[in-house]
Structures are given as structure tokens and as C-alpha cells.
Length: 343
Image (cartoon, rainbow, N blue to C red; front, top):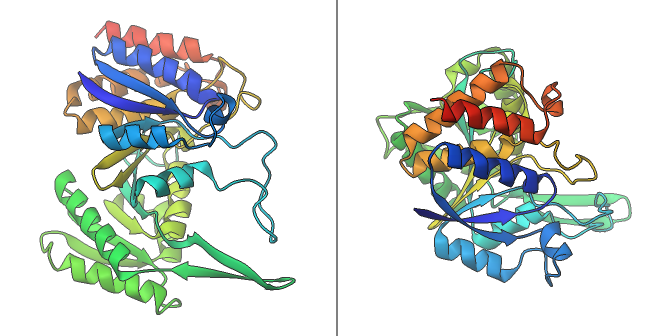
């Protein structure tokens, strides 16, 4: 039996967790979950901080975590030029405190979810420690704000070594480096140079370069040309949502966040129960990263069975409200469980 820390952010994450447990049981997969709250869920449970040290310690000790989206406190607003209206984004803070440096987004079609393309299957790998998201900014004088894009050789080399190693493990033949070095000649120039230096050590993989604006056009016109896209923090954030749009929406995506000795399989989508009432949540955002986790555990047969069951249920028209259907969380889950028990 595998041990996994389940980082529970509350809201629809609670419904997603219940659905996932039922589906794993039906698939015959035994996982011992150690549940730890974080984000708004931790604060509402009386924790002194949104990301308790005990939660981080548990993830580090286990090495593997499955995470729902961490929700902000009630009444949280957007930051202003004069400072953040709420504490830092808990999901970003969670990654930072664990030392996670790359986020892998599998982008592939799921039968039963309408999309403009069929047969899309690539991975977007995003560097998640620096770039503009290092949040180094200040107001110079009233009405003038300066933000710094941070790119370092050390972080870029680490990121590309991981990306090329991932491509090798997945049997991919090409990696595209996404950049804007034609304009940001120093920042993206350094990033691109690191890509070229690492690529030399992987001669069996075609190292390709593409400017980010052209990448956007290529993704919505010829997405099948891509196998691995390697992007900095900002470009990767934007392109990951674009990729989700290619394959049926945010519910069809997942994230695997990687650090030294730690992997966090993350639900990309989550919401409060004020926004999505209990019992009506779509469980796919937690099921899909769990499937990626099963693959990495070597449970490929179970992972494949779950995907086949999901696709069959979606194709039959059983979908939650956000996917255009009327099914409750329980109804959708029961349909998936029934499919698994019949195969």
C-alpha cells in the first residue's frame, strides 16, 4: 500500500476527495491517505497559519502529495499598487516553501469533452520559481510601478535538465523552448542560452526554439506538432490555460509540481462552497492528477481503467453543471464506479 499526503484546501476539494476515494476503491487501488488541511481550510480549523509547518513536514517526509486547490480567506480581494489586499497566493506560497521548481501540465484530449481538436497530446513544463512571478516590484513614485523579471542561470539550468530528462523518460523526440529573446535580450537571452547548453547533453532529442507569440498561434492552428514545451513562469502560466482550452477546459487538466525529493500532484481547479454548492462539484480536477500519480507508481493498468471509465461516462452525457450537464458529484461518481466494477 502506498502512503500519500492529501493536502486538503476545503470547498469543492472536500467533494472531490470523497469522489476520488470511491473511484480508487472501485479500481482496486489501495492508498493510505494522510490528510492535512492548508489554505482557508487550515485557518477555519483553527491553525495559526494557512500553510502549517506540520503539513509541509508531512509532505517532505512522504515525498508524495495529492493536493486540492488552496482557497483564500473569505472576502479576499485583488492586490492593489499599494500592496496586497490579502496574504500571498497560498498555492504559490505552498510551492515556494516546499522548494518546488517545475510544474508539468499534461495536455491531452479526454473523450466525451468537446474540443476543437482531437488527438492532442503534449506536456507543458513550466519553471515556477522566478521570472515576473518572483514578485519583486515596487512603486517608484505615485502612479509609477516597477516590476522585475528575474532569470538566473542556476534555476534555468536545473529546469532544463529536468525537462530533457522528462522527455527522455516519456520517450519524446523534441523539446520546444518558448521565449521572447528577440525583445528581452538579456533575461530571455540567458534562459535560451541555458536551453542550448543543456540540449547538447541530449543529442537524441530535437531542441527547438519558438517565440512565445508564435507559439500561441501554432497551438491554436497546429497543436499536434508539439511534444514538450518548456516555458518560464509567466509564459507557462498563460500557455497552460491556452492548452486547457484546446482539450475541453480546465477540468481536463492536472499539474505535477516537482522539487528535490518531492512531487505534488495538484488539482488545477477549485472553488469555495459559496461559489459551488456542496454536492455539485466536478471531481475531474482531482481525479486526473491522481491518475498521473498512479502512472508514476507503476499502477498503469488501474490508471488506464479509470480513464476509460471517465471517458465512457462523459461520452454517455453524464456530466456536472460546469460541463453542461445536470449530474451531481454523487451521480457522476456513481456512474464511474459502476463502470469500473463492470470491467
